[in-house]
Image (cartoon, rainbow, N blue to C red; front, top):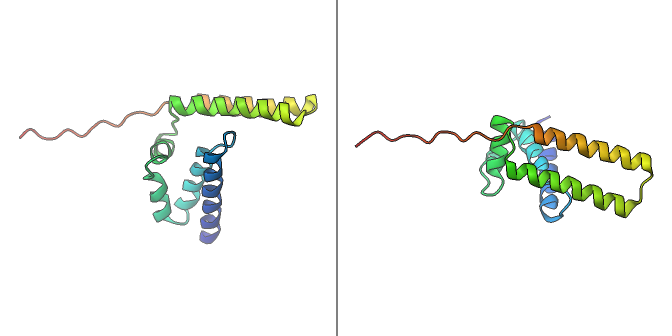
Length: 129
């Protein structure tokens, strides 16, 4: 089973990289899933993601607190709205499909917006000299 989670973890990393390059595909959710997979298969790669210079902080905030920053919420909501508009204009869906996809995006946005803001951990206080 360990190899399965390792493979799925790398698949999620690949999707996250694609998401970083494409404007309407998410990045962080795939990296969150990659961290979860690597926590079951490779502590080394889990630590690599959690300490990544760009994505490590939001991944740690999610893992430790289940929190999403205000900036992350804005980007997620904006990305979902843009994705829906592009879907609607590009696919010309039936009203049923448009409604279903719209409700999915609304439910997803509600979940993201309902997550708490990250709490800053207190800085360590050095002993006086």
